[in-house]
Each structure stands twice: as structure tokens, then as C-alpha cells.
Picture (tube, rainbow, N blue to C red):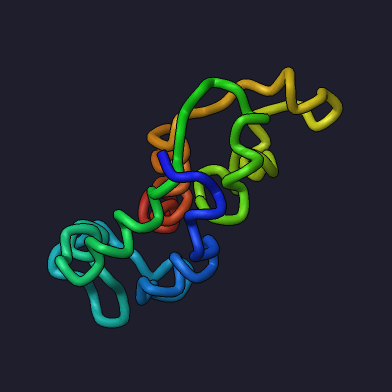
Length: 121
């Protein structure tokens, strides 16, 4: 695992290397309708592979949210964890009591949120 100082790119910079469609622009339909991007094609596109791999640098899963603090500005996963953006932990509790959620659980919830317009038209 790299130290935070060895990670020179911020989460914003890492995400900016992906050409993301506008919100609600992903679709599970293949072929994608005009103006939308097929999510599977986007994720398997070789030009996105480096950006995806780069976003994962520094991620760790210790089960303790406070351990994500050094990487909160360089790892999208750690940023979400440390700032409780998914509201999985009680904001009134100290971070030392928060339960860490795996990146896989986050990606599931965020993916469903992105394609919800297809699931519930």
C-alpha cells in the first residue's frame, strides 16, 4: 500500500481522467440508445482501464473508518467512507465507532442509483 504522500493525484484528478456521461447517461441497454452510454462497454473499454486502476490506488479495507483519513483526498472510496456520504453510519457517533463498508457494497449502491431511471421509469 502506498503512503498518502506517494499518491500525488487527488480523487478529483483521478476521476477527471474518465469521460463520464451526464447524470443518468449510463444505460444497461445494448446497443445504447442515442445520447446514452452502455455501462458494460464503458467499464470494459481499455482506454478507461488505467483510470479505473489509478482510482483504486491507496484503497484499503481495515473495517475501521478512521483508517481511511490519510487517503480521504486521494481515493474516491476513502473519501466516501471518511465523509459518510452514503449515510451508512450515524453522524452523531464518533468515527471510531463507524463500521467500514466495502468498496463492492458502495459500487453496488451507486450503480443502482445511476440506472434507477431504467428500473423505475
